[in-house]
Amino acid sequence: ARDVDEMIFLDLDGGQSGINPRLLQEIAKECFMPLTIGGGIRALDDIRLALKIGADKIAINTAAIKTPEFISEAAKKFGSQCVVISIDAKRVGDGYEVFANGGKLATGLGAVEWAKAAEQKGAGEILLTSIDSDGMMNGYDIQLARAVTGAVKIPVIASGGAGNLEDCLGVIKEGRVSALAAASIFQYTQITPLNIKEYLAKFGVETRVKKL
Image 1 (cartoon, rainbow, N blue to C red):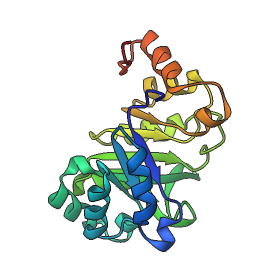
Image 2 (cartoon, rainbow, N blue to C red; image 1 turned 90 degrees about the horizontal axis):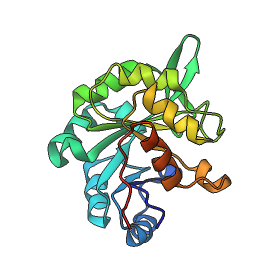
Image 3 (cartoon, rainbow, N blue to C red; image 1 turned 90 degrees about the vertical axis):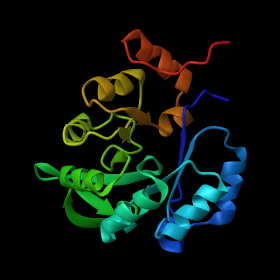
Image 4 (cartoon, helix red, strand yellow; image 1 turned 180 degrees about the horizontal axis):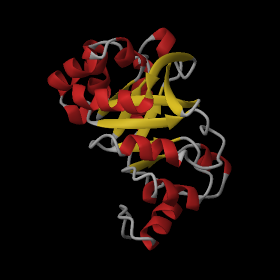
C-alpha cells in the first residue's frame, strides 16, 4: 500500500530455531510484492519450502559462512537470481569484519573478501548491513558500502542507518549501491517510501513510482 518495491523479511529467531513455516505463510499471504525471506535457511529443503510458501528470493547468512559451497548448491539448484547473501559487518580496526548468528559471532572474515567469495560462489545479490549503523538512524555506512560495491559486480542492497532523505541519496550516489533497505525510518518518522523515491528522482536516480 505504501509503494514499496520489495519486502525483505528476516526472522531473527530463525538462526536458533530454524525456518518457521507457519510464520512465513502468514507473511507471504499478506505480501503482494516480491518477497525475500531469511532466517534459519540451512539447507536446500529450507529454500524449497520458502519458495513454495511464496518467497521470490531467500537470504542466507550464517549457513553460507559455515559452508560456502551451500551458495553454489543453492544457485545451481534454484538460480543465482534467487540467492541473496546477507552480510552483517562491523568496523574492526581499519576494516570491516563479518559477524554471524545475528551479528553476535565474529568470524574473522573481511566483509570485502567475503562479498567477493559469495559472488564467485554464485550469489545473485548481497544484502549489506552495517551493525554499527543498524537502527541508529544516523546514516548508512557509506565507506562500507563503497568498499563492497567496488569489489563486486552483483547488486548490493544497503541496510542499516537510514534516518532522512539525504542518507538515502548519499549511499546511492557515494556508496554506489543498487538498492536501499530500511525499517526504522518508516516506523519512527513521517517519511514514506514514496517520499524517498520522489527525492531520489530529483537527483537523477531512477525509481519506480506508481502513476495514478
